[in-house]
Each structure stands twice: as C-alpha cells, then as structure tokens.
Length: 579
Image 1 (spheres, one colour):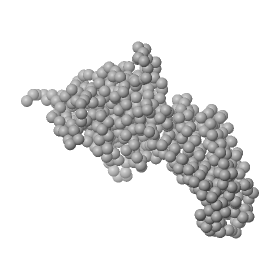
Image 2 (cartoon, rainbow, N blue to C red):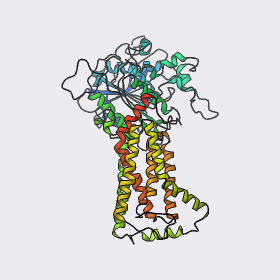
Image 3 (tube, rainbow, N blue to C red):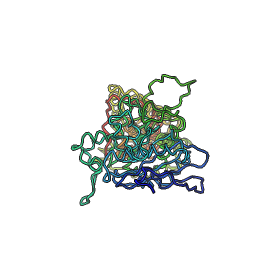
C-alpha cells in the first residue's frame, strides 16, 4: 500500500447491463485527509464512443443529497435513461456538504470531477473535450458556477482548487440550471421556511460559514451573477425554474439570465408556471427532462470543440456558413424572459429542441375551442328553430324566467353595459396604454385578436347561422342569436389581458377569475333573454379560441418584446411572485 493515500483512484471495472449501458459505480475522484472520499458514477451508452459527457450535480441545500438520487419528482430511470438514450454519458457526482467544509469546497469538488473525467476519458469511453453540466437547486448553483468561473475569474486559483487531479482545464460547453441560486446577496430577505420547533441549519449560513452580513465578500464570490460580466464569454445556459418556487425565488433565475445577456451570453429562461421547488405541481416532468437533454445534446454534439482550458472563447453553435470566420462576430443575444409560449423560431437553437409544451397546448386548445364553436354552429344551422339541444335551451330559459328585479337584475344590467359600450372602451383604452408604452407587439396582438374574435369569427357565425333570439328580450339586441357576442368578448378579453399584462406567476389565479367572469356574462345573457344557453357556450368558446390562436401566432413577436423590455429595464409587469 501507499502512504499517504493517493488523491484519486483509477476507474473501477465497469458492469454492463442488459441494454449495453456500462456502469462505473463508486469511482473515487478525490480524497482529502479528514474527509470522506468523493465518489462519482458513470453511465456510458451502448455502442462505439467516445460519447459527450453530462455531469449531474445533485441538490439538497448544500447540506444533504446524494449523487444516486435526483429530486423525488424526477424518477431516476427517467433522468438516467433519457440522457443515455440521447447518446450522452452521464457522470453523477457527490461533493462535500457545507457542514463538512464551507464554500468554495463544493465548487472545488465539481471542478475536480471534471478534471478527473478528462484525465480518464479514454478509460471511460467518453469525450473529455465535450462536457456539459446539469444541476438542480444547490446543484444548479454549482453548475452555474462551474460554467462561469475559470482562469479569467477574480481569485481564479481559489475557485479552481487542487483536489483530486490537481490541475487541468475545467471549462464546459453548456449548462442546465434547474432552480438554482444565482445571487446570495439578495436572499437575506427571503429566509428558508423551517417548521416551528425544528432545529435545522440555515443553508446559506452553513454554505458561507457565517451570515451574508458577516461574510459579504464570500457571498459575492459564491454568487454566479458575479462572474457573468462583459468579456467573460459564458457558455450557453438553459435555466428552468418554477414560478411559484417558495425556497429559491423565480427571480433568482431572472437575475442570472439578465446578467448572462449583458455578458453577451446565450441564456434561455424557461418558467414552469405554477410549480414550486423541485417542480412540485408541474404536470409534465418528462417534458422538462427531455428539453434539458435536448439542449445538452445539441450543444455537446453540434458545436465545435473549443480549447480544454477553463474559459476563453467558448464553443459556438455551428452555423450554415461556407467556412468559419477567423474573426467571429459577437453572438446574438438570445435571452427568453417570458412565459409567453415561444415558437421554435423565437428561441435559441429551437431547430434541435423539443417543441415548447406551452406553445403546443395554446395552439391545440385554441383550435379545439374554435372548432367546437364552429361545429356547434353547423348543427344549429341545419335547424335554427329546433336544433337537437333546443329542449335544454328551453328548460334553461324557463329557469331564467324571473322576476327580473333586485340584485340579479342589477348585476345582469351591469354586465350587459360592460359588454356593450365598455366592450369597446376597455380594449381601446388598453390599446392606447400599450402604444404609449411602446409595446408594439402587444398592441398588434390586441388589435389582431379583437378583429379576429369579435369581427371575423363572431360576426361571420352570426351571419351564417342566423338563429332567432328568445322571445321578449329585456335589452336591445341585434340580428342573430348565435353565438353570443357578449360572451365571446368576455372570454377574448380574459385571454388578451392574461397574455400581455398578467405576470406568469399569477396567471393561474387570473384564469380562474376570468372563467368566473365569463360564466357570469353567459348567465346574464340568458337572464336577460338575449340568448339561448347554447349561444353563450359557443360565444365563450369562439372568443377564447380566437384569442388563443392569435396568441399562438404572435408568440415570437411577444417573446422578443418581453426580451427587449427586460433588457431595457422597462417592464410594466411586476416581478413574478417568489412564493
């Protein structure tokens, strides 16, 4: 035996599973006297390598966690299987927890793991020149630091460390950061929620070995935004964060995305609407994992290899140009800062990315609603006096028979007025507001949505179907009962305001309130005997469907506008809620 023990061990003999994936379990990539050995696992896809590498960094508040287990919302088979199925090798690393050693020990370990993979790339069957990092929570924070720090950084030697393979390049080609901290100095007013009576260390104090007030310089050194500065040439970043994250505010990813943009970097910020930490509440974890792997696959397989040093000119996506220029132009800033669904042409490298789930659902829902309204119109047009559901319409109208006085009558009259004169005033006022704020794309979307919904769809259906109204309406009405223009206008207004004014973190509450408003408008039209029930249902579907389809079409322009507003610091929307 040797003494003292070596700073790392050579890779263990791999085990090959039934799918041909080779597993290197429990490889010691670094040792430090007085600390447990730091281990990593490697999964190498079946087939001929060498394969690009994804280094997975677990979360746990820097106090907990294990390389073997992703967060409980992400099945381990999904994470590991998606990576290897994409032809990428997966390296899962442990690192010292904060009560074992404060920062920068955790970053030292991540960089030691990267150096180890490069040193033993041939043994492992991987490509040491093509490495990306991917982390969640505390691991996302460390992944961001690994992508942003290097020889160019202030106090570079202190950040690189000399553990394990003591020297060598630690640069990476791409970073995926799931809900990681980006600026510790702004988290003093956001204490971690700890159940009453429970004695649990504060993660930030444990990481720094003191409070941010006591150690401000170390807090800045531990913040990724510190290193996203002009001239730092960061690698491409994909930031995915729940808008209702109660542990790490969504604004942390916004801060990092803005800093990367100012550094002329490529940053894609993907909000997960309504999701808490570890994407709790998200209905589609698989899509999040798939998008992350697709992003890494693109940047690790289609980008030219840069030098193996820590930083410097980063790898750039391949372009369809005759030959690379010896003096490349600065990359176009690609920073998506909106939950407005983005079409493939509106976000970076989308030719190779998974289709945006929000965009797809917006378009499909809009088409389904508008198609349903049109189908209902065809049914009514075949027999405008006695359509198949006339019995239901008659029974509903009899329930609305009266007496038409008191509170119900007052509410119905107010809604009738809102859908009448105010139905023009409100969108016109909103249009003027958007134009004054120079939100040209939002103003164009509003105009197009109202023209499509109120004029094209509703008036065309009224003319084509020409259904008689109920007898003895209590308000003045025009021709054609089908569909209800008031119901269509209400649903359309809900969609437009939600798209251009309501922050993403509050849209769920807005949709609920908007649905209640639309239902109230539908009730008022039947209470006033101005429409049959089926007319109001078709109107709401037509208005919402038209609005969603126009939103879908205008999404690229809206996304670019949101990006411009963020860059100029002129956003009219409030910060997304942190909880």
